[in-house]
Length: 530
Image (cartoon, rainbow, N blue to C red; front, side):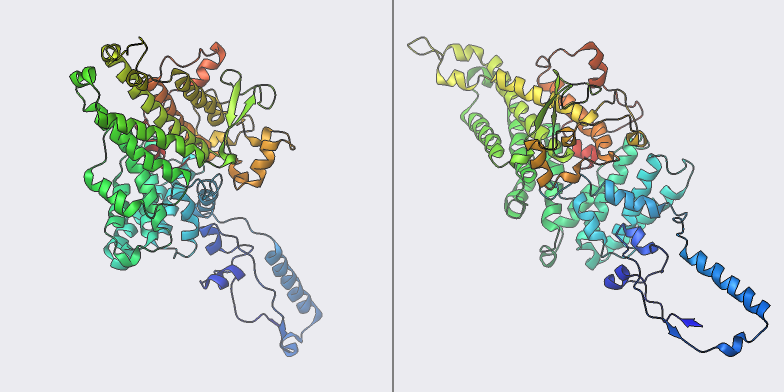
């Protein structure tokens, strides 16, 4: 009889030093975490002489041989995945939500770190249960789970309970994984708002911020602390810009002393710091009375505008060359079925990069809008500042908004819309994104020897164009309404006339039962899904 020795588990579980259930061909522990199961080592066989037990007639030996052969065949047949939806939903979430189309170069400090943090977590930890609950939520949204299934609710209750337990323990409360769990559950709430099941709120995000603010100094050198701080700063700034209110003095002091020194050095974080100035300028401009505007806008306001303008211009100098959009013409590198803007479309390395660019453009439009309002309200004051040569003074020229630049900004945002929507002419759900009829413009449409494609291929954005396009689905639901909101508010007369056949493509309508709030705060709605 063959003695195969003691059970030892798969190679991956042995390296992680965790218990393995030894399922074939992949163990359940690896499937649950979405990591690669590298299989089982081939062990040498040891034999034991048991000839005496099999001394029987040939018929008995034949029966035993048949049973042994049948058992051997059963072990060699690859079994189908288990009936547990979590075994498929979690890898799907970790691949198409937290990995594909994302990079540390454009990170906003959240989803990119869920997968590596989860690799060392127990299956019943706060982060693991939060990821499982959110994965099942997405799994049900794409139609892989029946609407009457109680599993999403059961997993959500379990995740909330486990997060509550973690916040009650001092050691767990100071871990990055607990903060990530709160942010993942915030995503779950946002997904519920997207599907029209509940009103979006930021309770979990506020809880994550509280955990970071109350963290002891011994935990502030953790691996993801700086990125998590940056993510919550981004949310705060987005809300302030949307509501046209400045951040509280306490928050500004916190940003200056604790956030700025440790903030990751990437374009997204730099833009968030500029967003603090944008919110402050909006608040200052709203607080100025009409009488003050007619007389003199004030030195402080002028300094704020000059400073913000300089910050936004300097931001462009730190952008990687591979981030700049590539313009493609309809019918050449752009599929004719994709409605274009003025016969063209701008493509980007990833959705995240496109979002960051459009945030910068919105900040520029806000600045130009304030300058334009100052031009109108202080027209009489400007006339009084003609000099002796009967020419406009430097003072009056300062407040004149650059209309050509505004038109360029509006066009740039409109040119990015086909990149988000592709040839979708109607609102659709996540499930329909896998259809072969849906086409999204990307760098893969360019010739193989094109300089832009070669530069894209050499960058870390090569995997940014995902096959399931789940990221673009959430971008359509969140980012695009944000851009259109900004255009309608800031530059309603700068939009070029649309071709009648393309008008429906750009005028998308939100579901009447969706309760998400649109605006510049696209992260508050899609919570960094795009």
